Length: 130
Image 1 (tube, rainbow, N blue to C red):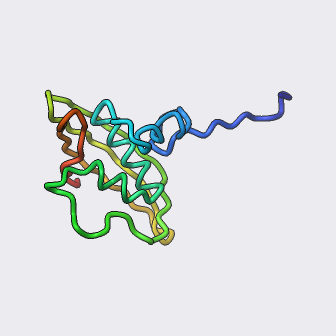
Image 2: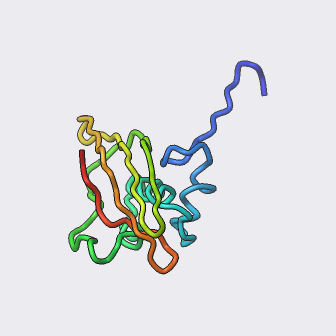
C-alpha cells in the first residue's frame, strides 16, 4: 500500500469496530446475543437493515406491538452511543442514544431499555424515552 492510500475498514452499524459479518450478523443469523448490550446493538443494526423479523424475534412477546416495527420511510441511521448498561441476574438495562435523519431532518432517540433473559436468551421488553 502506498503512503498516500488509505485503508478503510467499515465497522458494524452498531458502532463496534468489527465488520458487520463478525459482529451483529452472527446474531441476525440465529446465535443468541450473550449480553443485553450485545442484543441492543444487534437490534440497532437490525433497524438500519429494516430487519422486521429479527426485531420481532428479540422482543418479549408480552410487549411486542402488533403493528409493523420498521417503516418504509427513508431513515438514514447516523450512529449509536451506548451510555451505560447494567445487568442484575436475568434483568438488564441499557441506556443509549441513536441518531438518525428522516427527510433530511435530524433526530435523536435517547432511551433506557429494559431486557429480560428468558430460556437462555436476552429479549427486549420496553424502554423509557428521555
